[in-house]
Structures are given as C-alpha cells and as structure tokens.
Image 1: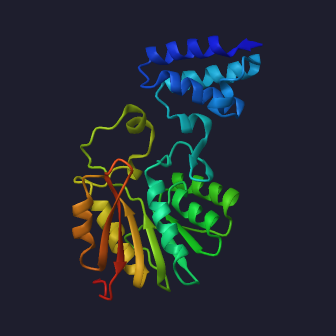
Image 2 (image 1 turned 90 degrees about the horizontal axis):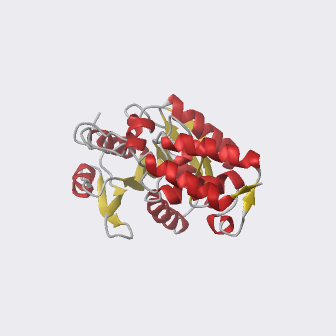
Length: 282
C-alpha cells in the first residue's frame, strides 16, 4: 500500500516544478478522480494500492503537460450532470450554469408544449441540463464541429437519448417550425486575447474565438436565433463581461426586452431577449 499524504506531497512538488497554477488542489482533484471519492473523503483516507498510485502518477505527468484535468479524467461536472469530454470539445464552465438557471426558470413559468434549440451545443451542457431537469421539453442540440459532435452524441446517449442532435452551421440552419426557446454559448473571445496555456494549447480554438473583435460569431448566432424563434420566443446568449452592450446592440433589430444578467461577482455574463415580430431579412 502507498501512503496518500506522501504521494500528494510528491505530486504537489512535481506540479509546482511544471508551473501548474494550483498544484496542491490539482493533486487532490486528480487523486479524488482515481479513487472516485470527494476531496473531503480523500482527506480521511491514509493509503491506496500501488495500482491506484500508478494511475495517479500518470495523471500527474499529463497535468505537467498542462493538459486540462477534465481531459485527463474524461469527465466534466455541470449542474447535476457528469459530462464526457476530451480533446476537440470545449470544457463546460461554471459561469454557464447561471444561463441555464435563468432559462429553466423561464421554461417552468411557460405554457406547454415547449421546443428549445441549443446552438453550438458542444458537449451538450446546456441542452442536456434542460432535457434532464425538464424532460417534457423538446430539445434539439445543434453543432457543426465533428470532434465536438462525437462527445455530444456520447453524452446524449448516456444522459437524455430523447434530445435530437443536428450537425449544422448556424449560418444556414433553419427548421420547418419555429421554436419557443433558443440558447447559445457561442465562441466570443477576440483573436488577440491571450489565454492560459492549457486552454490555448488544448481546447478547440473554433469553440473559443469569436472572430477578430470577438463579436463576429456571436452576431451569426443571434441571426440564427432570430430565424428560429416564434414571435415572443425567448433567447439566451452567453458572452464575455466586456460584450454586454455590444450584444445588446446586436439584438436590437429583432428582439425586445433585452436584459443583461450578472454573475455572483456582479459581472455581466449572459443576456436574454424576446423575439419581436419583424421578418428576418434574407
């Protein structure tokens, strides 16, 4: 048997040498994943098997290469879900949970039936949260990256097989019937924005970069949402804290009741709007 305390101290030193930002936390998280227990439970254990220690040391070496923890373990936690993730798909962030909470609250107050489309669905964090928490909503997840679609389909099969997955680009995507809700977490970072090494080198740029200014891709998602939504339909879009006013302007042609929503640190993180009756120009 291997002593956990010493194993963690050695891992922390190795991660520190590799310039990992939170070496102690990362070592604990990785070992927790190996043992499939919480960090609190980890602190109550004293020893693990040599086989478990070998797996852990492999994880630590991968982390030294700045591979994200979620890619190492293959899991990302989002609200009530455990999502499968890996190279080629964006890792879901806690900030997106605020958008999901707002959308679910709106859906719960709405008349049935309800159809929702999630644009740029990635791993399926938004679409699957809605489908899992409110099973009577018809959810469609739209994604155009083949790499991301692999993970999306895997998560749909495991969590909510009733979700329809469509491979399509937002610039030409349309449905025969209008829907009640559209959600989107588009790529929105400007091309020049400097990102942490583990993000820049491992997560897909196509899911991060929103064009030169960062607004080019979000504007395409907004146009698609305008085509998809019924008059009076609800749209929710995530954005950076610097883009709230730009998003508001971009929504102004086809949406009313534009509302900026803030996170717990009082930063503008997503915006909702109601579809007006104007026809979308071709």
